[in-house]
Length: 307
Image 1: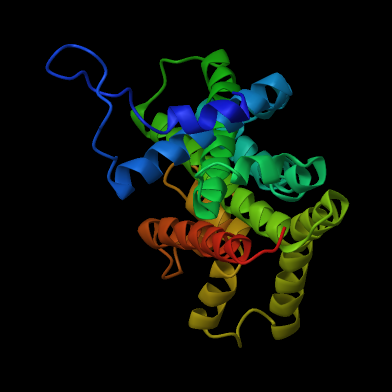
Image 2: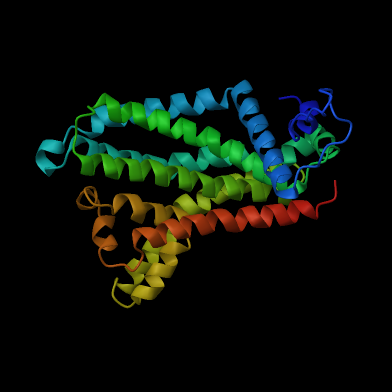
C-alpha cells in the first residue's frame, strides 16, 4: 500500500446529504475507532510489503520444507515408543520452533523502525495523522500475521502429510504447539521492535537481534543447566526453578508444548512439567506478558524518540 493512501484509508467515505450529494460536513470518527482503523491500515501495509519482499513465501516454504523433512524422518520410531506419528512430529516441530521461529521473528522486526528511519520513509509516514503508538502496533500486527500464516501453512502441510485420520488428543497437542509457536514468535517480534526503536542504524538493530536470539535460545539454557548440575538438582527450591523458567520465553514454550498430554512422555521436560507450578494457563500468561512488556516499552521509547 502506498504511504499516500494511509490518510484516505483512515476514514470512511462521507455520508450523503438529504439532497443526495456528498455532505460538506461530516461527523469525525471517535478516537477509538480512528486509532483502530489506523492500526489496521498500517498492519495491512506491513503484510503487503512482506508479500512484495517475498517474506511470506520464503518463511512458508522454509517452515514447510523443514517440517516435511521432520515429518517423514521423525515419525519412524513410533512403533517402539508407543506414540502416534503426529505426537512424534509435534515434538520434532516444537524443538525446531525453539531455534527457528525466534530467528525468523527477529529478522522480520529488527529493522521495522530503524530501517524505515534510514530509508527516510519514517518521516513521510509520521507526516500523516498517525500516532507513533499506532505505527508500532500496526507493524507488530502485520508481522505477526505474516509469521502466523507461514507457521500454520508450513506446519499444517507436514501434519496432513502423515495422515489426517489420527486421534483427537494428537491433533489437540499439535494445535497447542502451533498456537504456542505463534505466541513465541510474537514475543520475539516485540523484542525485535524494541531493539529497532532503541537504535538508529539497522545494522546495530541486527546485532542486538542476534544477541537476543543467542541469549534466550542458547546461552540462558546452558547457564540454567550448569546451575542445576552444580547444585546437584536438589538444593534449588521449586519456586526459584519456576521463576528461572518463566524468565525465558523459550523455556515457557518448552513446558507448554513438550510437557503437554500425549507428548510429555516423549521428552525429558515432560517429567519436569509434572512437578512445576507453571500450569498451561500460567505459561500462556507468561508468554503474553513477554509480548506485552517489550511492545509497550517499544511504543513508549518510540513516542519520545527524536527523528
